[in-house]
Every structure is written in C-alpha cells, then in structure tokens.
Length: 194
Image (cartoon, rainbow, N blue to C red):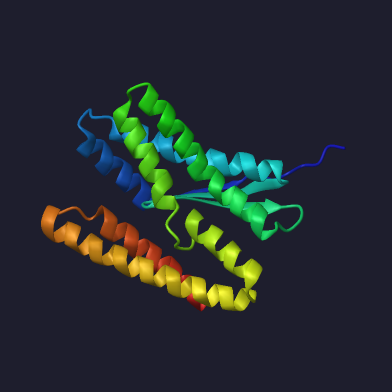
C-alpha cells in the first residue's frame, strides 16, 4: 500500500552560508571546500543508509556553521546497539573513502575525510562517539545515571577542546577549533537543561 511521507525538513543557517563563503575565499584553488563537503556528505549518507535499513527516515537535516545534523524517525525504537550501529556508520564510510583516497593518492581528500570521521568519534554528545559511549553506559547502568555521566564526560572533553582551541587562536590565529568547541559546549549545556 502506498503511504505518503512528508519530505525531510531542510534548514540552512546563515552561519553555514557565511562559512561556505569564507572557506571558498580561503581555499584559493587548493580544493579544501569540495573535498570537505564530500567528506561530510559521505559521512551523513552512511548514517542515512544504515538508518534506512533499520526502518528509519530522515525527518530533518540542518546545516550549520559547524556541521550537519540529522534527525531520523524510526517505526520502532532502536536498541542501544542499533543506535550505535547508525552512529558508527558515518565514521565507517569516512574510513572506507579515506582508504580509497589514499590508494588513489588523493592526499587532501584522505586527510579531510579521515579527520571528519575521527572528530565525530570523540566521546562528546551529540557526536557519534558520544552516542556510542552513551549506549554502552545506558545498557549497563540506569539510563538517568548514564545520561549524567555522559554529560560530565562530554563537558570534560569539550573543556579540553576549548583549551586547545584557545591555544590555536593565540598561536596560529585559527578560530576553527575554538568555535567548534563552543558549539559543542552549547550542545552539552542545552542537553543538561533539557
């Protein structure tokens, strides 16, 4: 039987458009922008494909100055293991494409793709690594305790990133990591209040 499903809601922040413009200006023909966008696209497609196998459908897709966020709805709730599988699919696709790019001597593509995958494995919610660690904790502890522990762990890792980002600003005048860390910090604080 045919059922109508609403198309996913797509949001693009002004910060994302500004970031694209700045990256295009800074790129100067190096190729960072197209390879970086491809790395992110492949990462998200890994999540989408795995979620689809598990009965999921993309409900919303947001592009912000610090990355993409997917909201996927499922016909039935996922187990912690299934959610971890969806979370790990993005970095796994990055690893596969990074290996292919290395084999083809596309060094810049390999570096960017592997960096996107590795960054997303950090144990910080809402990143993929944070989802996996939360699933491991929640399957062994009370979910409320796992949530508190994950919030504390995320806060510690974000604190380290803020510190490293501040050093990057002072030493190299590069604000990328600091802005990303502050975005993650906002997510941790929002999660704590919610």
